[in-house]
Length: 408
Image (tube, rainbow, N blue to C red):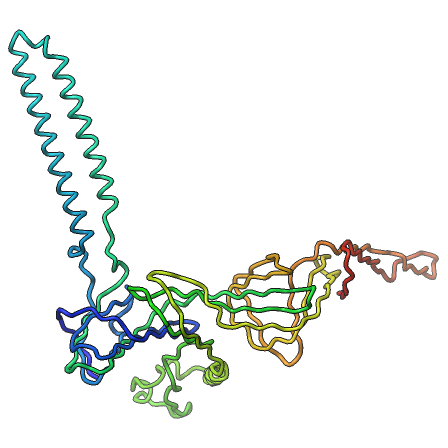
């Protein structure tokens, strides 16, 4: 479909259907307008480039992306008039002060100046106080210049060659969404609950109802096919510079580079099989909230990992069969409802065998290790020397519950 820029005065339209598609590195927003006029306007977030905007309809369309003028808003007009009024008040007070000053000079020429001095002082002081108050009020007013209700948005004017029965507007946001995982370990009931959440912010210029959300655990692929293949042993200048595939220097790279690219594509295809779709989301303008898009609850065995080799500390461990992969994200861990840590980036892969999940240090398990030099041997000359050495270790459970301990 043809798309060019134009300038036109359009009416504002609100979408009948809104969809947000979230990839790990990008967000795509789509709005559908039913029975639209031949020309109408919509709002898109600041930062959206015109090149990333796609408009579809029953006929050709032109579009223009522009900043929103704030000077026509009622709040801005009222604020501007208040600034003008305060400036006029300041000018009048300054003129009044000059009048008082001139009157005082005139009185100095008469014999009555002593009798009127207190009265002139009172007038001058009162005027100075009014000027100071007006200046403070003006400064405060300028600091609180009203922001447009459309602040943070750009206006997109669209004009179609017809009145489309349905028009679709799509655009990209390169900012990766914020994700959060929560893992709840219940040692009493012996289970693990995992929640995957995403922080969803209303990207529209108004409240939105029945928003549809799709989450894909993969990157958005700008290149859907591999570059054109040229035999490594017969590369020519024309082939290297035709602009279709890789540059000449890239073609000279080792063949392993091509193999890595193929592995990446294959892995993306495998990961793409899992998609989350959520309907019926309601968000107020500017509202942000976490949306839970995946929940897993699994039986788990809990034990204690005793690290005698390194830290000489005991750690709680859960062993369970993970149903699905855990998307990399900041993860909050809870043990029996108590927060025990929050790694900035954490992920797990589902495997055929159970996975082990460390849940922080167990302060109730006390470990001790003492080096022993008891293994001695006498030489032929009667001298004793140490031929072997060992350690004596002990584990003390200071809790009221029995635990399984694995020694390492």
